[in-house]
Image (cartoon, rainbow over all chains, first blue to last red; front, side, top):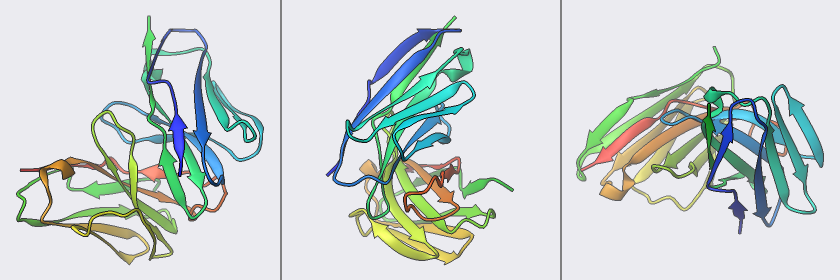
Length: 109
Length: 116
């Protein structure tokens, strides 16, 4: 089975840095994705990790430690438009995708 | 064209109705997906089609019946639904099926389904 945990809600200030953690306990691992979903909209892809380490993409970075079953998404220079839900998605064996519960981020002025 | 389209945007149906949701992509993607999303919950995978063949069925009730007529189209046929099936139904596609590669999924805007 698979169990994915994320904080339910986070609040941060415009211009700040925020780290959203994701932990997982799974029976197989093929990769870990992060998606952003604004209220009432479809999810959009942010990042992908399959090897340990940090992947950087502009203001967004994602880190993975397979041995610890742990990932985080780092958002720098927060903007108001970053207020959204952030979904950690685990790809297991057998073409199985499991979305974590999502973290609702509120960016305050 | 980097878009996944879904029709209709909204659908209201009774428990005895038969309806279909449609999804289309023209990116040449070889995998397509149906997800169900309840309010304030993450998407739940329902079906995956790889190269037009159903490759996974996450124990979804038989009142949901997927169909992939060709590589660009994906349908979800609905029959005898229950009020608890009311949700946002999302379609997605990826260049290749899940296989340990960085094949991001492109999501459509969804169909908001209400079952009365």
